[in-house]
Image (cartoon, rainbow, N blue to C red):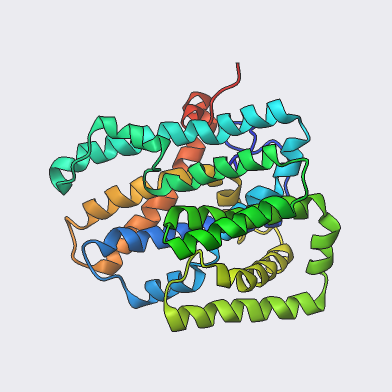
Length: 333
């Protein structure tokens, strides 16, 4: 299951996809897990420097890569008609957003006596206007899909311009949520447009000049990380991120489907499961590990392993017990 993808079995996507997309999406999910692993332990201790540096380097790339890959699949979905497109996105993105919002609220309510937070069951209402923790990505993704639907007959530069203006204006006004939405919307729209113009993407990926430019783009991202620390969703970084993503796609296309790359491809094929599962598992596993050890390295290892293993386990269970797929997709009639 890709984020917003279509199913033929409990978790595997029905439509055929290029292997490099699964590989790149799987890598992005692993980067998200590492970022949230640091986020979870930062409340109680200082994370190791190597992890902070790693997350700073890749912080500009994780989410743009995920929305870009989601955008690449939009024209195929739109080709099935507006009605099927809309119901598919509501079933595959809107439904799990609602289900996991309820699960996250239940988790925080249960943990309130320990954490001292004042969570109540009625806080589920927040999901309508203020996404809960990591679920913001599905909330925004559903918005991108709806914009793509209503702008499907207009030139791509129109929604792209709207997203750019929104990101720039929100940045100046200090509106963080709108800045992120506009920023990521640009990459989503780029994916949609390139899927409609595959010859452009192929031309870029086969150009040596583009390969050199991609190296400069990634180098610029690294320099920014060392200079300013963690930089995310800044409009001025868009050119460097675009070039770095071009390089990432070029490299991913060169990786053969071997047993060494199979784990990342598996995560990419089932990205929705891994994305939804990892964060609550990180929170719980870190809290449990901290009861038995003061070692930051051990706590990190436990939560990262648990976050990824939980996703794998749920994929296996969902394949064996199709009814559990209700956690991730509303069933057909």
